[in-house]
Image (cartoon, rainbow, N blue to C red; front, side, top):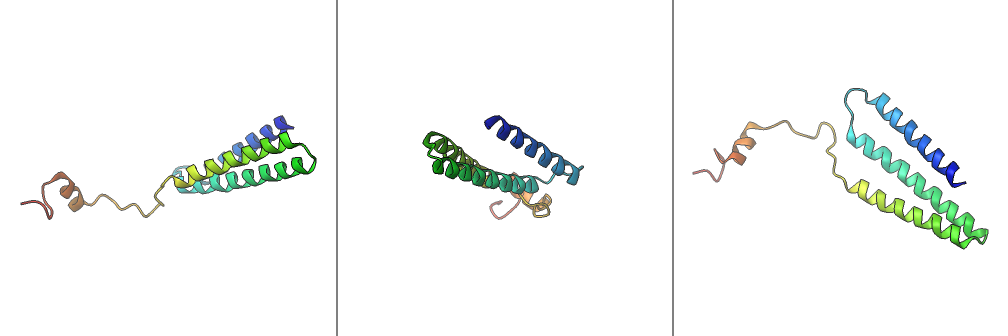
Length: 112
């Protein structure tokens, strides 16, 4: 059963990466990749929780604990992925020459 689950997961990841590559052939939008990863991770965590519940109902405590531990690891990964700050396209301002000079110390409010 675990091998089947692993193969299914690999297929889903491969299909999603192909969809991302097809939809963003020249300009890969990292915020789209992050959002899609979060959706897939949430679905996987939910599926693992369902598997844990099923194993618990069958009385297979060891299997239930394994599925539950996997779902908790997925929740941890969700936290990590969601904490990555990726600027949305169009919100990154082009280099401002005034701002650049301020950082160089050539001009700005602190220059004398």
